[in-house]
Image (cartoon, rainbow, N blue to C red):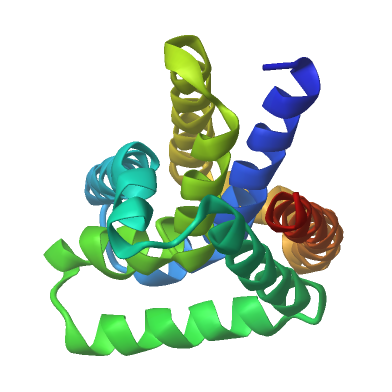
Length: 207
């Protein structure tokens, strides 16, 4: 467990969960809510989403073994999935899909369920973040490594919660142009990380 591995895990979680990108979506989802209702929604959604990712981090490897899927094969598949998400981020497809999902839910569901769907699932604990949880869990062996990875995920959860609490201010500071620039930069970083996942998986299979 090196500093590079810790930084890689932090960046991967940060990009796949995407706290800055969720700020605008959260404001759209919680339109009409009071400040107290927004705080409760942010806390509940963040806790549920992070809990789901922790569950996959703990039992994801066991699930793969049960299904007869090697970690190398999942690393390749997960890397390709993350690359697809990175592609969407760079070309602004992911934000459009999230906004459309938010609009559908606001018109069809009660406010009380927004924290669970779509905030926790799939906006926070989406396919990319779930894949990243399982992949990174395979890189952090031992009790100390696993606790370090859990700490990183909890830190991302805290950053996400604070971002949602300050959604109004952050949205005003960053602006639409700032969000577009940040999303594309994070997408490029995620693309590079996803390619590395695929390379590591191919090497493991070849070895």
